[in-house]
Structures are given as structure tokens and as C-alpha cells.
Image (cartoon, rainbow, N blue to C red; front, top):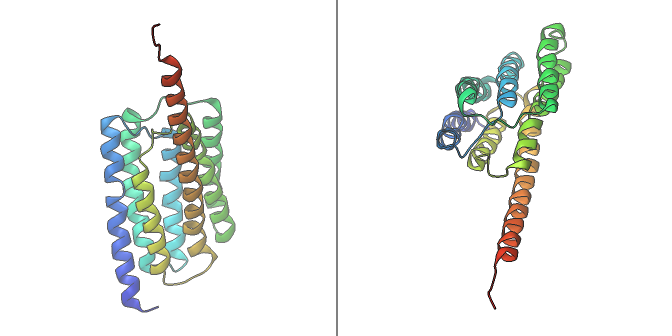
Amino acid sequence: MSETIKIIASTIATGIAVIAYIPYLIDMFRGKNKPHLYTWISIFLITAIVAYIQLISGSGIGAVPIILGVFVDAIILFYCFRFGTKDVVFMDKICLAISIIGVISYPILITRPIISLTIVTIAEVISFIPTVRKTRNDPYSESLTSYYLIMVKLILILVALQKYNLLTVSYSVLWLVVFVLFLSATYYWRAGKKHNRQRSLDTSIFIPV
């Protein structure tokens, strides 16, 4: 694939890395989108590590969108303290603890980048569990538009990579799979909520005789 195409893909992905979260932030300020604080703590920490791993593994310009994403994650994390969901249970704390352990393990396994990337990526996926659980309880508490844009960004990152190996490819591919499953489940939960709401309306109708 030509260098020009990779540069274009990286440029577009970098733009999307910023634009993707604009509707997310707007919905957050409106109270429609309620991100989970624990998930975003983990995402910020682990994305920073993944960005570094991709840099040292030869991703080249393909790593730029992820590096920019670290700063965007920091902004969302900051606002999570005010606008985030109050739906926090003990299991969420366990997921956060596992994610932090994954972050701590990185410097210990820094000489084994494949193992360290595997651990931090799994830790980040685990950190997404509180968001999945929260969304199952309230299917409309996440702004789905941002997820579609992020998926486009991940695809463009794959196109823009300078080198293709397990270290550079696995992160984007795994999150594409996770987001497809998450979006499918969210639409299923939304459909179920609409059905239950309609049933409640139907059963509440009283026609006097």
C-alpha cells in the first residue's frame, strides 16, 4: 500500500479521533450520555500504554490517532467526575482493580511487548464491563454515534500502519469486535425496553363502561 494512502488514512483517523467524541461530550453535558468513571480511568491509562507500545513497535503515523486519543480520553475522564453515571457496583470496582493491575504489569513485562500488550488489552476490555452493565440497565445512557466513528477510526488506523504485526494490529482488531458486539447488544436492549414500555402503556389503558 502506498505511503500517500497511509498518510491520508492517518490524517482522516486523527480528525475522527477528535470529531468522534464531540457528540459524546455534547450528550454528556445534556445529561443524555452518562459515561462510567471506572471505565474511563482504565481507558485513559491503558490507551497511553498502547500508544507507547505501538510507537516502539513500528506503527509510524498509524500511532498518531491513538496518541491524540489519549488526550481526548483525558478530557472525557475529567468530565466523568461530574457527568458520569451513579450506577456503580462492587463488580465495577473489581474490574477497575484488574485494569490497574494490568497497567502495573506493563513495566514489569516491558521486555516482552507481546505479553505486555496482551495483558493491558485484556485489562482494558475488562474495564469496559462496567459500561456494558450500565448500558444494559439503561440502554439510552450511551451515545452510539461516537462508537461508529471510533470504529471508522480503528479501520483507518489499520490502513495507516507502517508495519503489520501482532503488536500493531491486535489492539484495533479486538476493539472492532468488542464494539460490534456492544452495539448489537445495546440495540437489542433498547428494543426490549421499547417493547416493555409499550406493554405497560397497553395494560394501563382503562376504558370506562
